[in-house]
Image (cartoon, rainbow, N blue to C red; front, top):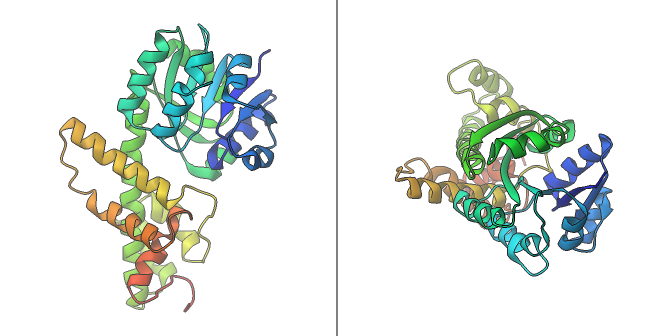
Amino acid sequence: MPPVGFVGVGNMGGRISRRLLDAGHDVLSYDRDAAQLERAGVRAAASVAEVVAAADVVLLSLPDSRVVESVVRGEGGIAATARTGQIVVDLSTAAPSSTVELHAELAEQGVELLDAGISGGAAAAEKGTLTIMVGGSEDALATVRPLLDTFSARVYHLGASGAGHTAKLLNNFLNGINLTASAEVFIAARKAGLDLKTFLDVVNHSSGANWATENRFPHIIEGDYLEGGLTGNLLLKDLTLYVDLARELGVPALHASGPVASLGLAAGLGYGEQISNRVVDAIGDLAGGVRLKGDE
């Protein structure tokens, strides 16, 4: 059996590749950062070309469309090495328009590209309970479904190429609103002198409940920022991609300014490469140095 190919074994890719390893798959991986390969504990390849030459299915987990495009189109990249019948599964969060272009280019070589946006964060990746949103061929999805099932609890086929990445951007925009709005509210609650545990219980049994208040803030108010998840800069990237998508669709992005400004603030104050939950500290800084846990 050929190995499963994997390009990009960082925060999410490393966790997903370990799920594949634990399920008994041989995984051959490439990352330009050798330290990431060592942390992931996977069999390392010297290049993207080596991965593509060995594998029938290649999974990508990369920061953005620019990097995905370079891996596909660059010298020694996927397009230069791929052969008819291969399937590339892009787990990155990327611009749907770029995805559609890459899909068409690879299709000319008989290679199927599936865009497979993932949601659930680092914890879900480790547990194998991610949600996956797929665009592209249903037949190709059926072929790779056993691999996806090793690290996901739900797999949805959204439609043609680009549909999976579109769904991911829409979902991440809601994620950004939930997180940043809740961060602002909990800083206000802290300054108002409310008991945060009691207030959080109120919110989660009232109309203000959302994914962030139910899953993030029970930890954040205790000083646990759930390190290791999506960074502020990457979430900000996702939000700007959403704004671009909304403009392409002719939909007014009326609610984008709040989360974009909040995560831009976090980046400006030095929190950008930390988990996006640190946006609560950025807002707290502007509110006079407020922290949800303790008096620091």
